[in-house]
Image (cartoon, rainbow, N blue to C red; front, top):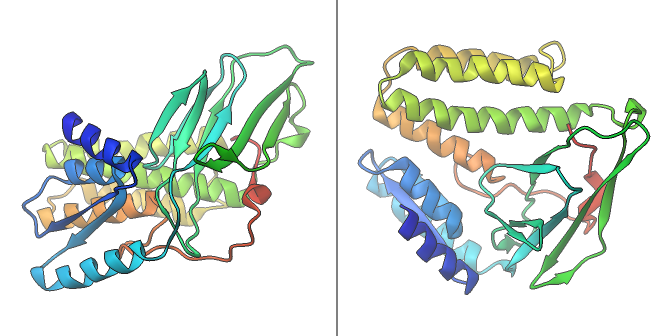
Amino acid sequence: MGRIRGFVAKAACRGIRTSVLGVGEDYDDDLLQSISAAGQGNFYFAESEAQVPGFVAQEVNESRQIVARGVEIHVELPPGATLQVLGDWPTSSANGNSLIHLPDLVSEQLVEVAVVLNFPAFASDERVRAGFKIGCHAEWAPSAELIYNVGDASNQPLDDELALAFANLRVQEATREAVRRHRRGERKRAAEVFDDLEIELFRRGVMPDKHPEVFELMRKQGERMRHELEESERKEMTHTSTMGLRSRRSDSKPLFGRTDGHFFDHLHPPL
């Protein structure tokens, strides 16, 4: 898997993206998901051969609407801080900073990237700075900063919209992990993935009284993992989760939204 990922990643750096299509049940979910992520392409799932022409046409049409390639988010963190990127976005390091590599951007497509910043202990009077900027081929747009005043929680409200987005992404990641365990016959451990996630969300301040739909989904997914599943069901769950992590609908079509050019309008303090 590593050699294939390396090959398609190098091709992506040359402007060649790699999309994959899984047909039926006889393919490796993790392999195709990994290839499409490294190749900055799409991951399509067809239950039958009859669906293949439609996905191919969609891929060709989307390729004709690409408006930017090689887009990256540059993240500058203070010493000791770490970055966790949610979803399937490839990352790398350069000069001690982190780079998040986005796929080819399609006209009017809305791509959301969620990150979690973890800071070490600081003195109560310190201010912590994290810098973000976006660019294409090293041509950077104006940067934005998150300033955290240690010891002062007044500027760190837990935004409900942000909490819901974070929870949904973590549920998608947990679902993929649970499916892997279920496929290995570890039903009990697969169900416990969602129990562990519930504890994590509590710790992050995501509560069931504000977001009952998230906790209901986790309960249903956990219960589902305790029973036998057809391979077609596992394939569908993996594909749906992967698309959710890539800002795409489960039918593999892009999410669309208003594009006003203000990339940093919705930056929030870290969870």
